[in-house]
Image (spheres, rainbow, N blue to C red):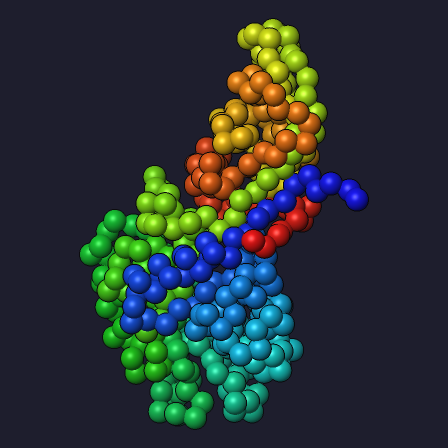
Length: 358
């Protein structure tokens, strides 16, 4: 049987622990677990199966993701954050019992003219993102008409902060106030808080919260880690040493020869590159962990591999497990070293990396 060289362990206990933290922080709010973008790289079907009937709703981006989630949970409501783009997707929402977000006149017209009476919907108001969503100051005529229609009116109103991780509490509180005032006459329940707002702004929790990044144990704030909020990483990513060699002083490593050995070095080839999801840098400042000990990455990340320094380890051999990120190497650190955000690293995890559930 062929050995698995790269894999990601998804820890169900960590996911449930993080969910419990959400409920502790927002005890009066229902929870919509965000599993879009393949559950932030963790595997949408795997995560949905773990959280089935343990959350009050799931949130996905597209109808296709909604179908994936519905296969694992036939009961829990599933929100489609981007809603539907045409009549075909609208019918998909009906047939798979998905709850779409309506954020434009086009979507609203499709719904009101489609003769669909049974489908629940969510209305989105724009509170500063500038993507889609109805204006708070000038609500749509059709939207206003729905306010008095109990049979077809939206069951929930959604808003999305453009900068919930900001320390400008006055601005966030004012946006929350305007959203609440504009929304109460449109829908029966309100949802505003993502992970950052759940952690930092309790006044935004309202009827529903939408944990995404924090559900997976990652901090949404720069300069902090999930552990700072008693969150546990739900994913550990591993590979194995594929080859070992000794480099002489003056020899170079990687494309562009950006790293030059200053002394004799024992190095290892790890079959995990940017095609697998590790961010490419001009000169890596990151490290991996082998036997719980940090080992520096040398030179640039290649498409399918990287080279690491084994000089401080005496007895490692080919096949030795290597942690790319997880307990010993926080994902937040990998993202910061690469000048990106954790979301980008997680959702970039490649298809060659096998997901396994613990």
